[in-house]
Image 1 (cartoon, rainbow, N blue to C red):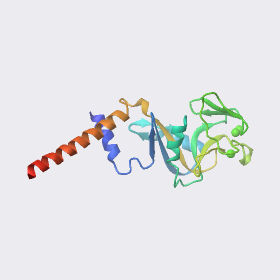
Image 2 (cartoon, protein in one colour; image 1 turned 60 degrees about the vertical axis):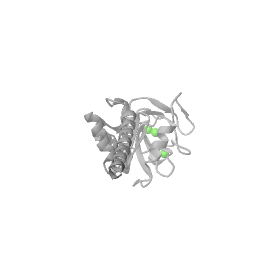
Image 3 (cartoon, helix red, strand yellow; image 1 turned 30 degrees about the horizontal axis):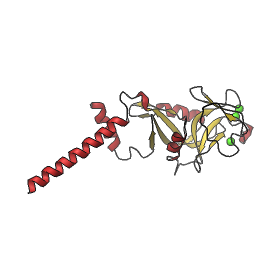
Image 4 (tube, rainbow, N blue to C red; image 1 turned 90 degrees about the vertical axis):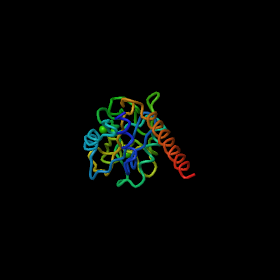
Length: 196
Ligand SMILES: [Ca+2]
Ligand SMILES: [Ca+2]
Ligand SMILES: [Ca+2]
């Protein structure tokens, strides 16, 4: 019960959802932070928490998740925000931070079977300095772009795994909304009755 109350308070806190988007078992957050490199973004993301869960620099595993992340991009302080993908270990082998490979090759490459990707036009291309090994998302259109790891950007995307919550996130929220609605209706009815 205490957990439900804590979650409700979080939901009702002003701006609690300002930069968080929930889809399925994932919550995404855009964090604005000045001059963060890819390594900075990874370290900072790991210190973020949401509903008591630890964050990580985001993977995006489906079109629905992509849509959720895109909903966070408006007004980002830099053209690109960091995400949790890299091909620094082996050029052209694009992997999420958990080691799952999602792409093989450059812009002419292909997605690894079953993996979602959303590269921007002609990406990944190792364009700047001839070697771009970290994943970013483009504010303007949500496309993915490889970018030099040490470039200072102004934002990054964090992912939280809601499956790790002690209770499913969606059910208690729905339940609370139902209970609040019923309480409000009950209060209204009693007030009316008292007035008559
Ligand atoms: Ca490289
Ligand atoms: Ca590369
Ligand atoms: Ca690029």
